[in-house]
Image (cartoon, rainbow, N blue to C red; front, side, top):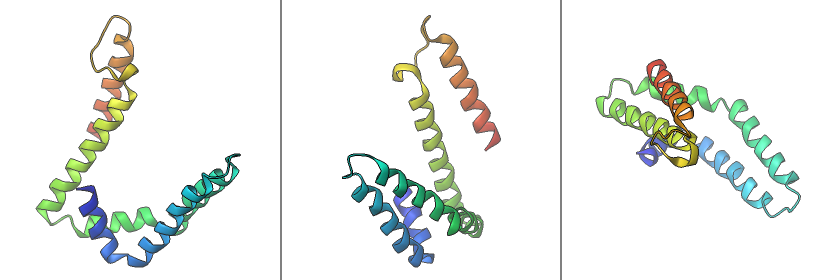
Length: 121
């Protein structure tokens, strides 16, 4: 689904796709630098480009233009759900979703945070 979303978005923004592909290649090339300074610069360049190219605004416009398509709505809702589940799983101590006496407080906080986030979305 993420690939389909990406393909649909980049059909409308082909120039943006080429720019992002070259920017994404920079950290790969920079990772050959043992000091890490080039990786940090490549990362800063990518973050800067996201702001300068107004990518988030273009994504919002793309999503707004497709809200009348029921399949798009289902796909987008599913994507958000998967992202939230991955964030939840990663935040659990020792990747355990089971509450034990040792982690009950942390798991409870993660559940509450996840619940709050899902209500706000």
